[in-house]
Length: 322
Image (cartoon, one colour):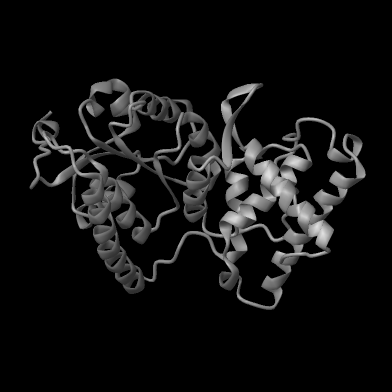
């Protein structure tokens, strides 16, 4: 294919990414944003194109996949691309919507892909610039320090450009405050996700009190939003950690899309935090024993013990943090 024959990874080359999308209008937007970020488009190709010729992606160093369905064909292409990327040799960005996130998360064996929720130009440009910077160049083993410095410099520059574009086009981050759950606790989880009897039938009074304390903290944090702008108190890592602790104590399973809702920030931002906290060993991916396609997020044992110690200290000192 002529597009792939032109690929070059020398120091001065414009880096390329293959675009897979069933939506020509979205593919055109992605291609334009890729160009702004300093990249060049290969394709675009549809899901059926890739199914008919899996070698379309062979040799490419970056893939951008627009996913607007969790049908079998789309999930097969995603799974095949991810399966061939176990050595992390290929950078991957996925653009999708929240309803398809759980299927996508389950199809990815690792959390290394960049995932963007919604059609946000600023998010795309910044993500593409970061992705392209990570694309390896032939015959060159970049210094780790130099790569980090370049990443910071380019990300800063592109962020400034992206913000200006967003201001000019009135682009805002996907998801308004109305799109996030208001009364959190564990009610947002899908019916049937609990894996057994609730904590009230299984544990002692101390743990029952601990669960109630976590729920009280969560309610108190949400109560602030009745009096102040919610953006003043954005703390997605802590909100997710509290919610995961409540789920653990309540013996419930949490999907990645539900955890994004619990973060009270735009889903793409929440996904970044989930990725960081998974890499740090705070969260863990756990497969559904009844459905191999589903993957849940859970607290690691170390994180659970740390939260226990924290909550016990609050109980002993009669303190509460909101």
